[in-house]
Length: 371
Image 1: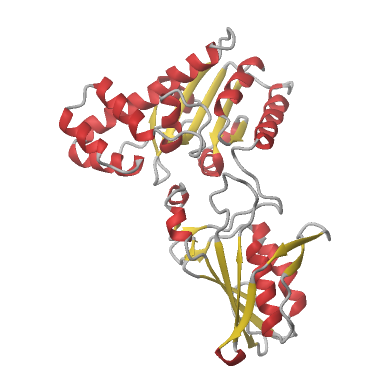
Image 2: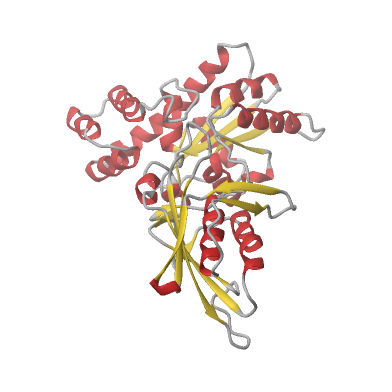
């Protein structure tokens, strides 16, 4: 939303119109107007380009991008005949510094909603036969992306524009929990439901689950409210539950942390080190783990030192996730739901699973990658 507002403000200034701080945006799916504030806009290079600056103001206290500065730079060129300035026609998107790219060609990573939002609000401003080049810059985007699992989704060099609606959503918000609970009740109440369900952590988990065919059975994408959803699943009569997620998320469950947002609890390396001690890893390797700064660097360091022990540690982690999850559910009642866990790494490979996780993957003909 803020990218679109800044792009619109910059385009208006480039066309000689006065700067408008409060930009009215038309949403892609209907004609509702939403007002978004832009801080400034001005022409550059003798009027050949224009730039606008704004800040993401989602009002969500735990939002990683809250207050993030956004720049949009626009310039125009005349089209001749059937020529277009990009494969998409009149709009050329350029991923500037801090904006995530995807694939070998380095295409900007943008959702259909975000793209349609730009089209709907910029196209009416342009004269006929004019192409608009829009460069988007997130000055702190690359640094912020290091605090996400973007790399495991194939997004590099910055943050992706992957919004799917006008209102920002927070995976730690109660509304997100309510939505997941409603999906769980809907699935479990279907006549053909056989008691098996998969809970996947975030968009990365959902995408990977579909890639491996897990969506032939019910799948629910969840955020950070893992504990309440596990209990709700048991109450709904689920018999077999598969947890699929990035190892940097699921490790928290192994430490008894069942609301996984990093602002509320983040002891991932401490949990991993405790499991390493229980697994009996040599002190020298445990010291190496303690000197790393992330789950991924811990994995890479340990794997470089001793691949065999690294594999044992991560399988122990997956098994511990299963055990601690079952213990968590048992606090709230007596149910016979069995929980399996599967962990994927930053390269989006299914790498580790507990005993039940391996069994559940076999239902879909899926095996773990060993290297």
